[in-house]
Length: 314
Image 1 (spheres, rainbow, N blue to C red):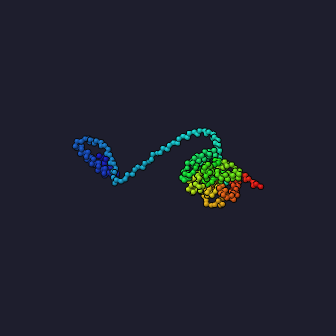
Image 2: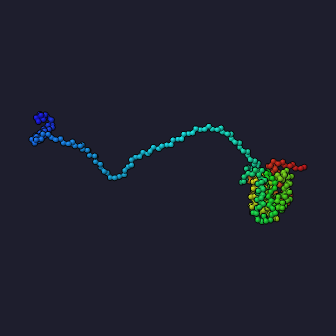
Image 3: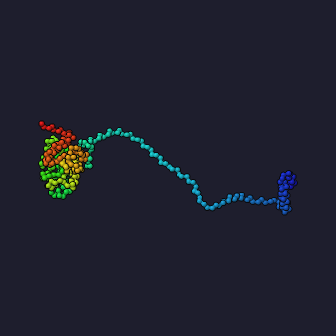
């Protein structure tokens, strides 16, 4: 004990240590008087865990979802490009087919047909089909009841020149051929003697295919009923030139009310085909002085066709 006291010095905690020493010494002396020679050791206590930090509960609220990183997109790998096979040598272009034969171009521009082109070799058969259709026609009941037969056409299916009259007469109704009476004989002379052609080289037709009773003029309804047949005749033959014979033919094909004196002597067009109008042969038989005008019309037509005009005698 004296050693403990001797060790006290000027340390600021000296008095506290001295007090504690005196308490411990008094306790030990008390135990010694009580016969306690040794002090039992207290069992070792396990370490006391430190308390976890307090968790402060807050009011419930929306819980933000953790950010999600999108999975990586696997891009398809491009397929390997197959090796390019060696190219075969390019064959030479096929030759273009030969152009089909067509009628000579019109002096006034291209033709204006609705139906397809018919090859020259096929035109006779096409006309025969149309002829049979005309023969069975009963659109005009009164004409179908009084006719002997229909009068379709006469001449070449590949003619350069087409003559178009108005309607058949008694002789035509009996024979089934257009322009075979007296007026027809004059037309034949105009073709052969005047123009230097053969009748079988031209195409001759009428607006009506049936004879009107008493050779009267066709009515507008009759002309309308029959006009489709004439239109198809023109489309099949496709002549280079057309000559309209008489007032009825000219007014119908040219859709005009002008007189023949104003229509003749100049060019018109029918489906784009250069066309002239002149007097009907029957009118020329009744009015011989008009033959001079008709001859002038034919000469104008001949020049356009490239035909030789005969010289005047004397």
